[in-house]
Image (cartoon, rainbow, N blue to C red; front, top):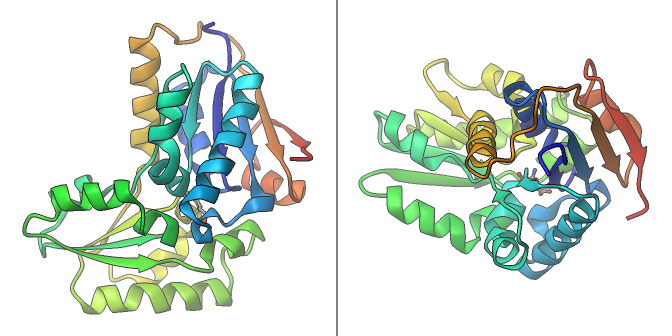
Length: 259
Ligand code: DGL
């Protein structure tokens, strides 16, 4: 079981930001990554649709023998992880907007959250927000349009920058000192985001925390892989060239999928 792969899925290429953290923290683990880019963006779908797609992705990974699944998508986690955990017998790791770490850092007591509509309107997100809301103002912003641009590989271009300015500037004007990136696609926008934000504003994302949590859970379930040369299989149901671009410099296999 220990040499079985970790399964990772996202609505597209964004979860590769999480895969990179996992690969850094757990270099011996074999991985299978599923990019459901044909169905991106998940963030504009109904909760039922997000759940059905997440289950389909899970079944794909379980059929390939994955010992643990990382839901590398805030939208899928907040809408589907409770259901997946209840239904399938392997451990699931999810990712949620890092409101709690931001709450510990903020001095202005105002936190901006950039996430998809699917995440912002989920019950799990509301629950977490309530817990930290105590004296802290959360300013939510739907990042509509950003995921499709990243899926086209258009990360550093005028259209992306203009959208980000439209989303970030009002939060800055309201006095936030932390901006939480609540979508796994957004870490790829950090250089552009930094060029827009004043230097004192912290940008917070959860990639590293997810990788650490994955390690902890593998350890506690006695599932850590022994030292070996890990292999990494990526599947996408859209243009492979874009996924390839996001994985430049990594030794991985990328295959097309009719899914
Ligand atoms: N990477 C997904 C997330 O973290 C993007 C969601 C989408 O496809 O809209 O939410």
